[in-house]
Length: 579
Image (cartoon, rainbow, N blue to C red):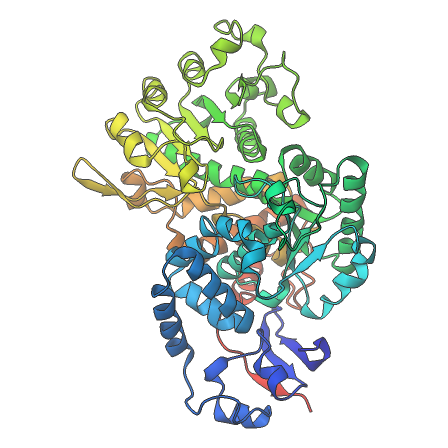
């Protein structure tokens, strides 16, 4: 549907209250932002010029959700369910989101992890309808004009990937945009940011995945990846264009590989309203689990010893967030660094090694470790024993590397070891929750990166909290937009982590559960948004939100009102004929 055929009408809070429709007939019926399918009333069918274009029956949204849920349940596997939900989104975004909201715990695993990984790997063969934007060397010089085509949608959040570090499965070329689509659906579910305000973007700089390059049906730019200055120039051209067209929108960097993730995040801290979810979101949700664990243990955060196994973007992001919290508790820089060990594929990360820049911050000085006499002493179990590790975090993607020896080594250091095997998908998890509980006689406090079914141990059933970034990024996004923050500060993620932990019920804490239920995503995201918005005001980076006529000033109560009122709900909007 041409962009001049419809216009969104907003209330004073910036929420869409209606759509003024200038088109008629099939262009209305087949626009996914406007379509109601069989729920168009007879009056709407007549007024908008497609009477006879639908069967006679008029369904309610609730009836459509039930029918769609039955169809999803009949699908043979999760990838078929993914295809159905995405197809529904391409035809009727309101119904798609109402369906997801009807059972968020179930649909989360379909629209995002673990199923979205398969969707990325099979993007070209699954391709049905174009979504979002694909920039590549052939069109990057036109980036500003291309972005302007979306200005009528009042873009508020973009998720941007270069497709190289996808969910532990690596370089997926053009297929990485499926991650952006999934993340933006979760922005809508968690924070109520309407689908038309969301823009998925792929920076297709090529691929080094030869399975894709050799695939005759591959849809991406068929070249090896740009590197060096050519890559930097490409990202710079995109960033300049995005800032020019959407200066007030949030840009979330997603699934960039290791050093690039840190370099790009840091390069645009002040030029764009941006953050990297793999680094900062992962760090924040992990911190939330650790805060909950400290409540259960009755111990101080600064008294723990931490080991992060896996020194990629996510692992170093976790270490960063732990370091910020340790220093906030009163520890000096050297005291903080002495409490955080990181391990990569070569063992303990130490200063005497040739390291990538992003790893250097958390490298241990061997001269300060009496027990360390060389790489053989840098093995996981040995570092745990000698470093007196009490909190073990896995971000390595090495399935089963937290074996019985490793888990029992942590348990020997503390009454309630905190074990967080965060790698996903499920096939890559460092240890199964049931095994961890068995090996520690039920003493361990466990949360995972992938969803796991409740575990029965010693006659009781335990829900396994999921360290899912979805608890963080939607609320951070809404808090930034509502507060008018001009940059995303590290303190926003500390505030977000504390807000998430506060949403764990006391009854759950008593049972050793570290994180809220995904079923409470909307409630959790609201509290995260409020905490982030207040922190933006406190830090002096919050201004009046440009997405709303409702001005909160520095009044937290009015900020809360804006956050509550700006949230879009998946309900059909009034359509106002514009002629």
